[in-house]
Length: 376
Image 1 (cartoon, helix red, strand yellow):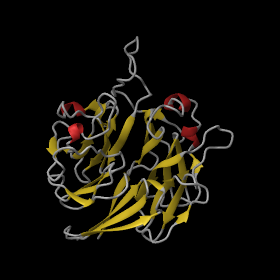
Image 2 (image 1 turned 180 degrees about the vertical axis):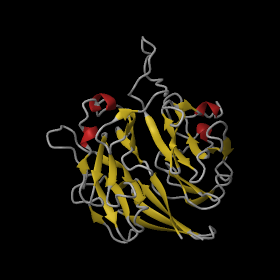
Image 3 (image 1 turned 30 degrees about the vertical axis):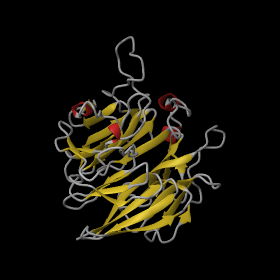
């Protein structure tokens, strides 16, 4: 049997939660980097024990920390992500971290606010711009500038490296849209056909907007790279690349009173048709809370054609929290464990694929990221 460690990044530092193999007991450890905003805290599946976190806040500015001993000791990047001198752009924080392809064990990618894509080829010590994107002649138009009104600033996120092809990359930009490269980042094209843009007026010719979208989170299934899902400012979508490159809105199948606006989407590790989302209230002034103060996860087992509400164990009312885009994760156990961290500092877990939930840690700072590391 395996045991899990949940990596938790928060507004005031990082913690880990160790879950026993029996799933009957767990222990909270930390904090790490207390006082720093930890935007993303991830493990390297290619090299067990290797971890990385992006930090900000305080007086030190944005940086990246790495560990080679499961978080017991840390060292700071010698050259964190930074835009080229003279570009008139400054990294406010590193928002997203993604390990590179299995064939490139020292490669990492980072997404920043404002939007920028960076790569490290030495395990995270030195970072360089991915010039094919950051210097693309259309990049300024794609991202709509550096001041777009996104809370906490515009962001590049959801960096995906295709497990079957390390040259195939996908990114999301809030705002901007979803973009794709087939040559390791040298060239890029938009991947937004079929996605609504409710915040733009219709074009006179009836055509779609190629860019300017606001994806919240994009996910590729690890065993079926042709299947992608994404949460968006304008709904929940699915893409089957073997049937074309047009996104289909599957969020309309969620209850109308709940809606299909949210931030995270996580996929069952073995089944491309099973996924979980956490809808939030995106009406009116966008309160970004659980709809009606009644939190619930929704699970689909048929690729989004139908959805099951999963709220057993959550508060029944007056619970006005939500879940950010990096704050849901799954483990590799059977049945699959599902975990989520909330804006009021609670970590919840389900050991039966969302059927029931229990609080695992309830008094942390606002949670910014959740990831699960399995140990056999």
